[in-house]
Amino acid sequence: MVLSDDDIQKLYLSRDFPGSFTGMATMKHFIEEIYNECIPLSRLYKIMKNLPEYVFQMKPIRKYKLRSYEVDGFAQLIGNEIFFFFFCYVCNVVYYKCFLFFSRN
Image 1: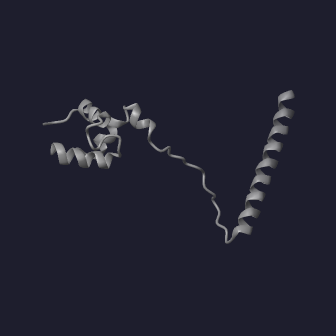
Image 2: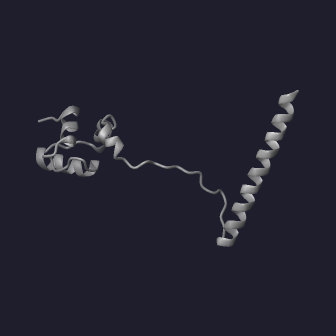
């Protein structure tokens, strides 16, 4: 039996299926065990991206810009952060004042 995309979504939302509302690796394991069908994880992810119940429970991917410098200790970290914040503040003030000056003319 070949499971369609709709069947897989129904399995994910079913309370009777042991792999429902779990991760894709667990769901793949239970589909292989119960239905004896090998479904690639990429196909499962592609199917579940269209299902709001799966997307809502996903952990958000946060990508923050990391520091581009290395420090040897906590004191150097604090010093570099203070310098960086001060430098950004000064640059923003200068940029803003130049913007105001040139926008008048």
